[in-house]
Length: 117
Image 1 (cartoon, rainbow, N blue to C red):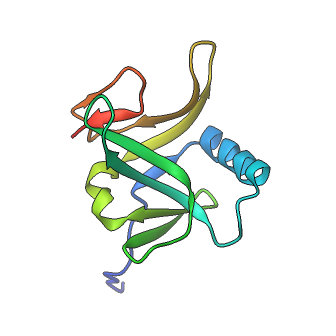
Image 2 (image 1 turned 90 degrees about the vertical axis):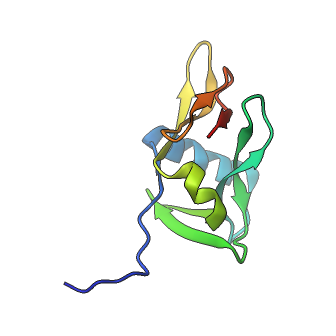
């Protein structure tokens, strides 16, 4: 068996609900060819970090992953915060939108879009 050090495991999971909603959004918003789903973090939010989720072009520091048929890009520096995360789309009575189940979060906020590591 060959040892290929360039193979990178998918760092995150997209549920079927998230994949369906992302496909719908991509079509509705007319996302241009060559854009991928960007997943990341930024400083801020009520718990310290906020999630980034949107369509963008690949940048120099990005890794690219194919997850459930969706091209996903992530800044290499964000991986320590996002490895193992599950992104879902919920359509409930009290909550509708993307949710982030992050096993690396030490604390999260009530809105579900902010966490501390």
